[in-house]
Each structure stands twice: as C-alpha cells, then as structure tokens.
Length: 294
Image (spheres, rainbow, N blue to C red):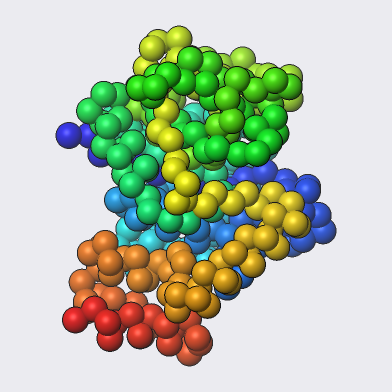
C-alpha cells in the first residue's frame, strides 16, 4: 500500500499582516498560546501522516528549523525546502517532487486551522490510496464569493471549480488542505502561470477534474475552519482557541500530547521529550497528560 506524505506550505510575504510579518513570517505568529505552524502540523499528525516536508522562504526556513527541528521529539520526520519566491501554491508539488516519490501527498497551507473530529481527512486519505486521483474538501460558508468554490453531485463527484465567482454555484468553499496521488508533481510542472504570475492550485484541481479523477469530501458542521490571513482573523482564531482550551482544560495542537495519543512515542520517549521542555505552563500541561495516560 502507498504511504501518505505531508507538505506544509508556509511561504508567502504575509502583507496583510504587516508590520507583524517584518520580523517573523505569518505562520510563526502566535495563535493564542502556540505558533500558528503547530496547528497544520497537528492536523497532519492526527491524520496519521508522519513524513512531512515544510516549505518556506529563504529567510524564514531557519526559524522553522529552530522551532521544529527534525520532528524526532514527536516521533515524526520533518524536512525542509526553500521556495525562493512566492510562485503559487502549486509550486509546492514541484519543490517536493523528490519527497513525494511514489506516494500520495496531503498538502496543508500553513495558515489554515481546523478544530474538531478529523474523520473527513482520515477518510479522504484512505479513499485516495484506494482510488488514486485527488480529493479536495468543501466547507459551507456565508460568502463563498471570497473563496474557490466547488460544485458537486450527491455522490461526491466534482462538477465544477470556480475561483471567487460572482455567482457561486454552491455555498461550499475549498479550504487549504488537499490530497493528491503522485501524478500531482508532473501536473504542476506542466502548468502555465495564471494572471498573478503564479502556478495556481485551482489549475491542478481542474486537471484532475478533466481526468475524471477528482472527488470532494464535505467537512461537516462539527468542524471549525479558521483562516488567519488578516489581523482580525488572527485575533478571532486566538479567541476561539482560548475559549475552547479554557472550557475543556485541554490544549489544542499540543504536539507532544498528539504524539503520545497516536502512539508515535512510547511512554518512556514521551517522558524524555517532556523533560527537555523548559519549565513553563506548557510543560506542566504535558506532565498532566502523562498522569492521565497510564
């Protein structure tokens, strides 16, 4: 059976968050009590993906390496590649072609946060291995005109994809997580840059659609999808995470806890990882988790 690898694209200039992004990239900004990059990394880990490539800018890549290391402390593997200039989401598959190899890949944008049961992603990964092709996701929103919009049949076959349409054919936006088979790299290499001079992820989706090999998985009402591209979005995401954590007494996207829960680390390895954390409320929480998991 094919493996599933993960790519996190954490590039871009983050101009909508200026001046926050002068010193640190958007994906290194704080979302309540953790760097933003923890959330897409947690998404992949919870979906069972353990081999991850992080793509960022020449300036920011060393910061991600310092923050995340090689991932062994969480029982995963993290490697790094540089995107020299922002040439579009689809370029991630070209940069990651060697990393993808013969496996399928799940791409997550570094500024997307998901909260809730992740059955939708686990199911899509499992189905995509069986059927190959590609899977995108649909999330119902109030103003689909601001997003890429997917129209689909009752059995999940995609009919059309439109980028920020004036008259959307559905209310389902396409969030920043995608699953493709290993043909995606060759498809990306044959793309023509769009009006923005970038390789568009929409064009990859449309190519799979032409091949009758694109499915959609609907993200249900029990899942929160948060975008963090503006100061308002960033504040709203932090407020949301804060409210959930305070109410439940559980952290969201605590990578150490996820590693233990997913059995990426043994109990002994988890203890070793937590013991290396600095004295902090975060470390105290990780110790509390250890007391609960006997």
